[in-house]
Length: 296
Image (cartoon, rainbow, N blue to C red; front, side, top):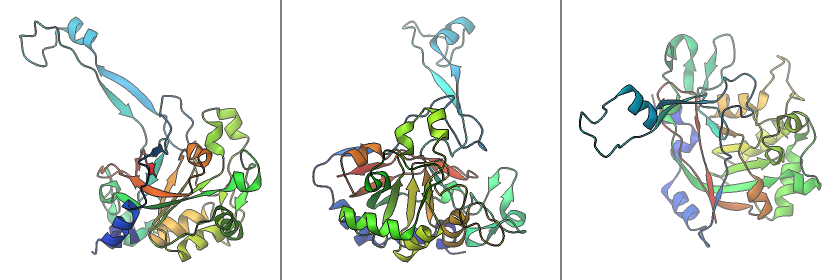
């Protein structure tokens, strides 16, 4: 099986694109695109809660008489270690190609299917262990600034015509190999769950997804938990609740990111930049928490 079947179109990222992206750095400024994660943080309701649990502490070592370094420790050296119990889709994250399935055969991108590739320890085809690093040109599409609002209204779609208009207003074009991040203003409400609930969930619709595909992007993300507008205004004849995920992730291997913090990027009016994200390679996982950066 070819590497593209498990990695997607980004597997063909040419070296000259990496060089061009690196040349975009002029000032050496780094802008984080992720907020901190914490127990009780807002999450998509279908995911388990985020937890950080102590496993080893200096006091616990002393009280239990543990000897992690052996019997001699007159310096009283201690340490802390913890379990992080969470879905890989906690906070800013990237979906692996095996994250979403469709159809009676429960298939996903590149020929993966539940009957052939889903084990008791997660998928073995298109899982997070296959996710590549991203080092390419990034483009911000700032919908709230274009509309003159702080945050898009609940269930508000961003369509292809608006994507085109925003790019024209910002003076940018979307090009092959780009990563396009789309701001709705949702993370400007973070972590106020009540205010966020009042704005669930704006985002790109199916026409915007087709627009991105036509321009040859390799990944895209928004600042919401669902990426696409919900509920879907165009679920099609089968009533697909997430047609954008189906088109981009399942059918075309375009990586999707969610819960990106795009507020500082928008405040600084940075519309094109070097985009860097390094997914954590975990076998059987269906995504990766990421802390991407925009470098200008």
